[in-house]
Image (cartoon, rainbow, N blue to C red; front, side):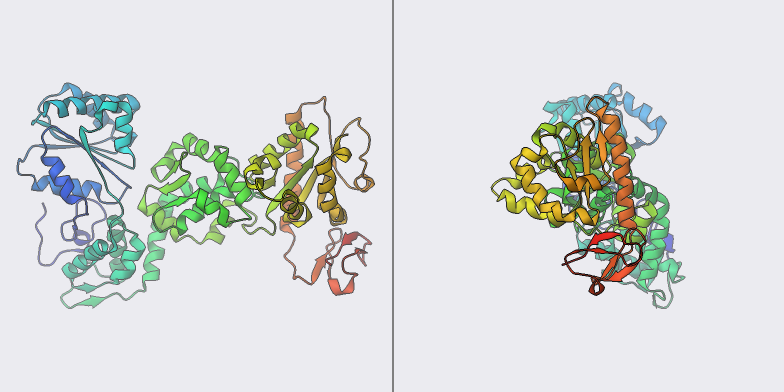
Length: 537
């Protein structure tokens, strides 16, 4: 252990890596850890987020265990160490073996270690002790490989540290350097992470040109906001690419509702590094459709499975729908992002939406196959889509007419009506069409006809640009092309300048008129190009 000198340097007090000396604060689990390390043969699993102080606590605790056994630290990040880890079950009298980043090992090696831990526990072997350090669920993954291992090892979970303990770390460092630090601000920004507290304190000192012990007590000369900016600049190199990758999702659509970006933002607003999507989604009516479909259809879980590099910083529990952060530095990064600038950098047109849905589908039951194909295509493009089958649970026990009417009247930017031969003859399609009939003059109804089945029974649709489907053709190819057209249509719609409530823009010549010049609630003509459109009532 390094000797503490009366005039320490900054890097010795607020350490960016390694085991701290001046600023070590025992976590709440420290007592359990010491007892577990003293128990012969019994395996110890330390799990919790990165940077929470697991490795530091184990190193410190081992120095207090009187037996003084030899300690060998191995990391699954190191190729040569992985080879040694694989050979551990064939070794004897190995002393204390620390396996860090256990979650990075191959399944075969983890299964072998699980069997070895069971043997050591059953024999109470005093010559070998295995200590496993991993992120969340490291103990659970071990038990998965050896069910009867449960009860034969100590699983100690390191949660976020209390504000009081983080403040203690900052105060002890400030005392060692004879300086004054904004203790509460640093502790709040660190959000329970000892490592972040070290990082923020270190950068606060550097920003104010404090590099070691001050013979006369000094205070910071730079505001804490400058420190945040410096740390964000450093963390951007590590996390910006990952944040953009997650926010983009599996199929980026700049016109879409950015469900992955919004889930990341909700996570940044949490206080406990986790967010329950089932609880959060109902709070955002304009995003409920797009985010819920990403979660419930398994797209989020599949995306993270296919991108394991994101697993070191973000975890999603497909059973509970809880999204969580694995690395406190990443949590700090997203919590301090400028979200409008970040959304623009990712490439989204905007992240504010004037309507609850982008598209609402109206169709007869006999054409459900086509309607569902269109709905799936639009959902894959990350649009908010009203498709009755996806909202059956919400419709239960409600007045269906009261539920559907506002959706077709105004809550969807566009209504797609699939006009098969049965459309005019069904009760619900007649009801739905009555709700959106007045929107034909506002360029917000998109007809979809079928080739060879004649014009729609609605005369209004013959005057509007729509799309023809061929029942004999490849439905996938046709729907994909329709999806592209609808995406471009939504792009034009989103790029229209935001007008005051008393203004109206002609979509043909882009002339902005005040609605007081027009006839409220009627189809009017643009004074420049004679384009027809519906003005607000």
